[in-house]
Amino acid sequence: MSQVQPKQPADRLRSEQQALDVAAQLAQAFRAGAAERDRERELPYAPLQRLFQSGLGAITVPKAYGGIAVSTATLASVITLLSEADAAIGQVPQNHFYALEVLRLNGSESQKQRFYGEVLAGVHLGNALAEFASRAAHQRTTQIRDNVLNGTKFYATGALFADRIPTAARDEDEKELLVFVPRHQAGVTVIDDWSGFGQRTTGSGSVLFENVRVEADDVVPFQTAFERPTSLGPFAQILHAAIDQGIAQAAFYDMLDFLRQRARPWPDSGVTRACEDPLTLDRTGRLAARLRAGEALIAEAGAAIDVAQQQPDADTVAQASIAVAKARAWTTEVALEAANLLFELGGTRASLREYHLDRHWRNARTHTLHDPVRWKYPAIGNFLLNGVLPPRRGTL
Image (cartoon, rainbow, N blue to C red):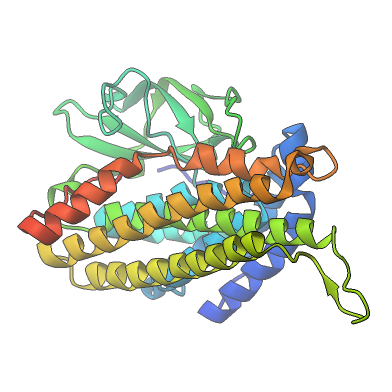
């Protein structure tokens, strides 16, 4: 079996509050360079190394294996904090936590001991799931034959920075597996060819697997996590909702700061007012309320996922999927609204090099296309009106 060591050992976090405090501290540090990293497309190797050394990468490891097993709502809050500071950095750990959830659901005892141990030490998991060659996002052509892996992946967010690349592949029986491939295994090539106009520094490039030898104990069943009721789909989606919420908050707070910079003293009062326009005040207040609603929807969805993790059955998983669909649809719309309002109220100056606030719109427009929000509302309506359970897949 393969062993992977982190670049440097990670800290051990002891509580949910400590995890939130560390995330807030890192967010403050990451915020300072976010605009420049996006403008110059400077990949965040050092910030991500700092992130995984902080112990945040291990916060979902079960207590039985040495972790603190934070609630899903706390995990989402961590992702929101990081995404508000730098949306690209906030997106990268999403696949890391997704792979850990697959491990929790389908891994053997020896695999859990080994991979959880690596993650507690600071190992970063990337991903190689999506493919150009397949007709749908959930279909793969990458194969394992006689313990050899071959295939081509794209949208492999975080693979450039990772220590392992969990990779979706099919075996001889067409069963889908998740292979925890070491990043520097012979035959693995990670290509920095991501050219999106938003989320520019996520490292979402391509990965080639050419006759890569696979250790049997690095292979975890994947398909069975969707053949039975599990929390995997809603768990994946709530993290995307948290990323969108973070982007929305970044756009909103930067908009407030931008408008305040144009403040002038109110005559004879000694008070400085950024704006007296009632329409601007109205739009700002409305968006503030919608942002708060996004936080509440994510928290509610997180609680539903916790129930589905502890008591997985068709009903609890459906309830979690619907709660997350509501949150994801809402945060998609609010992220776009916040980024649009920044331009509407800030004008074209907001996109100047001095401010570089156009990145929020580009990030929102790019990330909200991760999977179609148009699927969410019909699934919610069909469940509420007809009692039809939502499909079990990673996009709902």
